[in-house]
Length: 425
Image 1 (cartoon, rainbow, N blue to C red):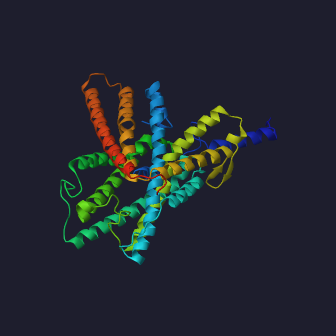
Image 2 (cartoon, helix red, strand yellow):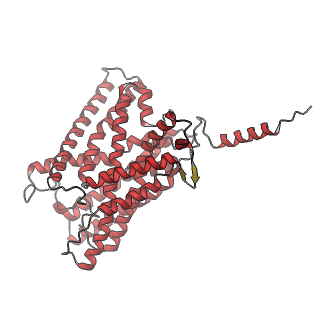
Image 3 (cartoon, helix red, strand yellow):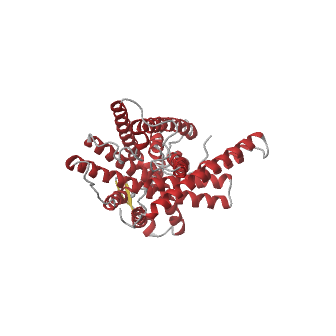
């Protein structure tokens, strides 16, 4: 006898099948990431797998206790700082577009002054819209666009540096860097050199969202860890080549007179339209980078809210429109976050100093200390063994670099504050 199931049973089974098709084996929404999308996330952030979903989860699983709270406080404070820094950086590039056009039409002697505050507000408005994309996995396309933009402006900067070097008839500058004298004291050179360490640390700070990026990779085979290793090698090698080429050729082109930023500091004035393209690419890149760094913070707050008020329509009810998922709580909280970071950026308009300080403060704990401690626990490295001693020496050396870089950045921030007026732009 052939049994027949009730229509409701069939409907329930088909519904469960449809739900299963959209879920991974751990019950979370199906991941679609590949080595290329992971590389794009890393480039955008920079330029054996567990199922840790976040950096904090990994620390909790391996170390636990107070270290989890310490890690979370440092990580999320740093992500807030990154959002502020990127808002400042985007406004500088937008203002540079206006100034380049002004110099072209009115001449280089015209000061072409303008405030960066309107551009910060514009950038914030754009981020309010993109912040409604619900999670990391769904911004892969934004990361790819941002990565392409980063190669665009880096390529333009490199080409202009090469052209200027050829026009100069040779290299400027020296192997020892900026010469002491002519407005630069030995103390200033030391502080600036230390700040440079902070800038480098900030440039490679994607480690704080590495696990979140890995969590976007689709289920094996191959393993998420294998895909992530390949993505890391591809992206870090690519960004390092571009960093080195742009930095070296920029210094070769201008020597001690090299500006902090080749594309916004007006080492170049022409062709003005090419500078406009490069700075527009920087803005587009920072739009994506802002989301790459802020999505983990958004997700953390929203998970806590969902756990605290699981039955609240204010928190849980969503309306999906393409890649956007609108809910009253998400709209309110993410908009408030973007507004607060925009106001903070308007209060602290010195990008280089902020970037150096952020990189210095977060480099040692998040990129060195916690990863080393987790490795020691996971691999059972015996205390006092040669490997353990080498790892601790590496950690101590990186701590010294971090402290020195922070000192250099703080010194520059103090100098900037001497002539600073709030909201002066």
